[in-house]
Image (tube, rainbow, N blue to C red; front, side):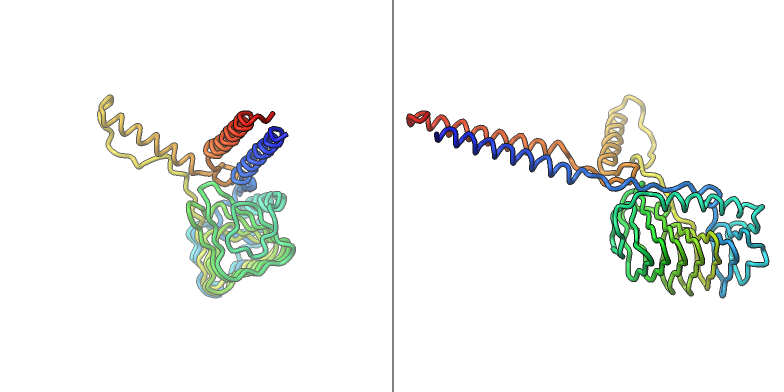
Length: 313
């Protein structure tokens, strides 16, 4: 009878350890959402693009193109410092850019949500949605790898007051804002990402943007702002180039092994191209699981042997 009880307890312990190991593995290996960066087409080269008008109260500086469509040149007023080219009207590149921007907007709106944003200050890479209008005040910290993507879906208006900080290898070119109505970037704010707002966009005095501002059907109003193109770099594959030692030498062998090790470490530490989180080492988890099961089995064996020696069946 005692043997059966020990057997039952041992089996239960084994099942519990196995279930815990499998659950733990599933939790830490679960990737983030497959948020993706939409193609911007002709809109990619524009720092500022609007439909009706572009008005600058004080000099606004753009790194890329400035465009209006269907608006015409006379609808651009105030002092502008444009690093790229200015395009006006639907028959120019601005018209093509508006078409491509609408496609990107639709893509962003249709991506599956990971959950409510609700002003979370450090969201993981993924697709984050608001129920209606959104007002954000403070610092939004985005931490991730080269390929991680953030998509913010806001069906009504957005008011942003504060700053966006990129950490790790996260990149401004992989941050997107899809806004269903008007957008206001408050005075002194530092905004990051490609903003595609269906209606009007207002940059209050001193607000700066690392990205793009695009109004699909409305107007753009600025006041002493700077809009720079979002930086976008490729993941580093290995150490920087150095003079190569003679082929076949010991230095060449060591250098090759170092490069391979660096590449392997970068691969292990990186994230999937779909925006997933780094996966943990499953081998370690299964080693612990197997070792635990082995310990339980040994305990069961020793207990049964002890009972037999005492005359129990």
